[in-house]
Length: 64
View 1 (cartoon, rainbow, N blue to C red):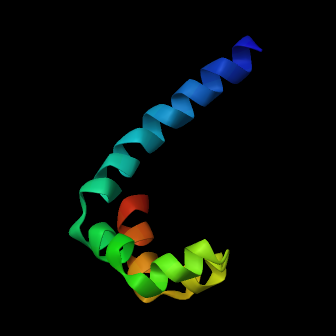
View 2 (view 1 turned 90 degrees about the vertical axis):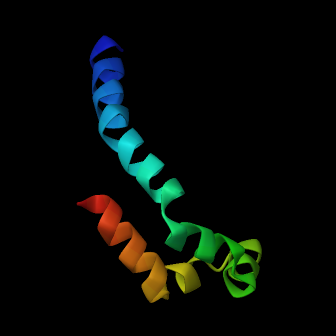
């Protein structure tokens, strides 16, 4: 359990700043406010989001 906790803490320390960057990116707000994206998510169609080039660009920027 201690090793898991340490690994989880390290992973979250790395992911946290990336998530903060995404939340502050205007492209995130654009996606969040897009009615088509909202409809896809509400219907459970996450593949539509994965196909969206704006989403893929946002993820790509956050992964750097």
